[in-house]
Length: 213
Ligand SMILES: [Zn+2]
Ligand SMILES: [Zn+2]
Image (cartoon, rainbow, N blue to C red):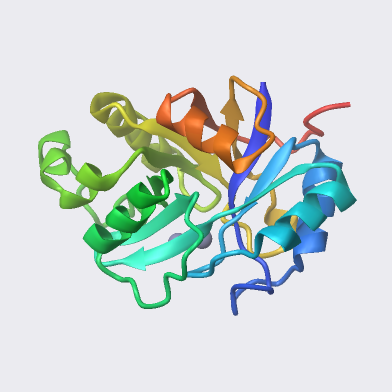
């Protein structure tokens, strides 16, 4: 099993990030993750910097992005063109498909499981346009509660989407709170994309113990 935090933010690409990419990679390695994806908001990574982080810290580092769309935040992997001017999910999907990448809805039910809200029904979920554009669903997000995670897992299974997890950490201590368990080793962006396309992964919540010796 190969453990990757699929959703993190750094001060390099996100104004709201409180850690540098080096601090992120160092901490991810320390707690025992095998890999980490940096998904700053609407920011596309320079491949050279990602390769440098991977080799300096001896951990798989992958540069993705969290793109703001009219249907919510979407994590994209495999996209290397700027997305600053892209906000329609349809346009994003065309770009991602052209490069053979994948799209995963970030925290798809955030805010829908508060005490005052009636939880969404599966029939209504199927009608949501967002789900027609995706390869995966972030079932486990560092800020999501148990009910939200259980519901997202059901939706991912019913819709046949990859089940992923990511901490959404903006600072060092949040890293790894949620992560994705892959069946295959992930050594590159291509490996990650293939495993998500084949749905060979699942989101998990970290219990705080070191993840490997
Ligand atoms: Zn987000
Ligand atoms: Zn995020």
